[in-house]
Image (cartoon, rainbow, N blue to C red; front, side):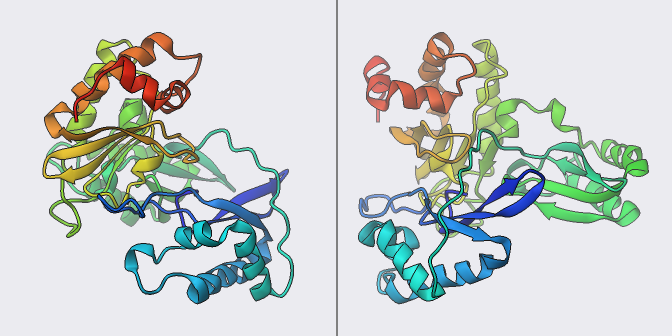
Length: 341
């Protein structure tokens, strides 16, 4: 949510949708060597009732159209206009477009996020099933025929298909009585349930990168599963197999897999080399910091291992890896665990 140019955060009153807090100015894109480009988290602009969402969105887009940098593609993003003019100025411009004041943001406390994997009650005798799709790639392997299994379910049972920001898939509107049938179809195709996943794999994500993306300078989607396997082994060795952390990998600095908000991230710098970021948050509300640069692919886990060891010994109760790194501070982490770059 905070990674987007424009976002709407749900505001509920009991079981009723009251409206949305409007978030503006997020964005992950940056360019290596260009310090005037950077990732940014969105600011909270105000509140919009459900019937006002499109009107407010149009006003935000018009302000960017009229005042944003249209001459430099690297700066043609809302985040740079916000940083140049300030949030108060931007709000005034949006209100001018609306012809009325924008309501103040509602108090909202977000303490966790849900990936919706597994079965969930949808109401009225129906359920939806969240299916893990590693790095968003739906395809058949010899032992896990995900594409064929999902097709069998949709053609036989019906229902809907939705995709999530975590690159997973939801099978919706499944009659409750057919849940066992869906489970059998998926099992027949080698598609195991989410409970077989490690926490670190469940919350991992990569962009397509090489060879699909012309901007990529390093691998991401094709190598992250192996990196996750190394991380799983390392966390198991340290007695932290249940450690909760988000891991992201991208093939370039543009940040399509939202690496800069992750607990741990690997951002492509050149072929087989990455920048290693730590200290983001599960909620996506804090940016990570570069810990080590130009780390070879085969040294990624070795480079982060000393941080895991310190995290194991010094973490607070229920403290996530990114929260720990943020609390200790990047300078203290570097001082106590020398790294090469």
